[in-house]
Length: 267
Image (cartoon, rainbow, N blue to C red):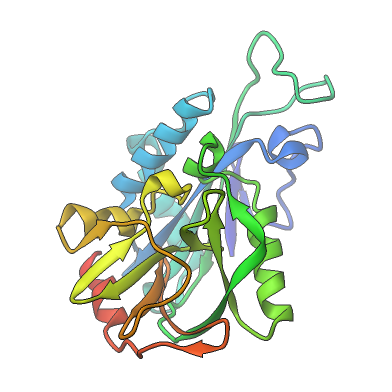
C-alpha cells in the first residue's frame, strides 16, 4: 500500500494526519474509492463529479481537479506495482484543521487537506447472506446521506449486527421504512425482468455504478419493501464489487450468476 499527503510519499503508517484535523476529530470530510484496472483508474470522471457535488452540498472547499490528480494517480500506480494491475484508490478530502475545539466553523475558512491511498485489491463477486438491520436506518432527509463522508460509524454497526446474527452483510431501511441500501453498497433487485433500485429520496448514496445502470436504461428507481417477492434476485453493487444476496434474514433468494458480467459491463 502506498500513500501521499502534503507533497510526500510513504506508507499509511509513515504519513501522519495532524491531530487537529476535522476529518480525524469529527469525520468532517469526504472520500471516493476508485477501482484501478489494468493500472488505469475506472470511471474517474464520474467519481470526481460526485466528490465535487458533495463538497458543494456540505459547504466545503472544492476538491482537487482531475487534471491535477491524474499525474499523482499515475505515480501512485507506478509505486504500488499492483499485482495483475488491480487496486483500490482512495481519495480523501478533509475540511482541514485549526486551533479551536468544537464543531463551529472558524472564520476565515480552514485550509482543506487532501491525501490518497492505493492498495492491491481483487474485485469480489461471491454471494453473501444478509439481514435487514433492526438498529440502523439511513436518514432520508439528511444531506449527509447523499454524500460519501469520512463518517462510517453507522455502516460499521450495521455490519457488526449482521455478523453477530450469523450473516455477512446488513441492509438498511430508510427512516421512512422502505429499503435503502447495504452497509457499503447500493441495492439492486431483479424482479419480473427489471432491475429495481431504491430512489435517492430513500437516503441511499448516489453510487457511480448505480447511476450507470440508470443512465443506460437497465434499471429504474422504485420504493422497495424489505420482504422479497417470489422469484426475486438481489445484489449489492459498488465500484469494487458486485455480490449477489443468497439469503435475507435466513430466507433463501433465487441465485444470480450474472453479477460479474453486469458489473464488468459498466466499466
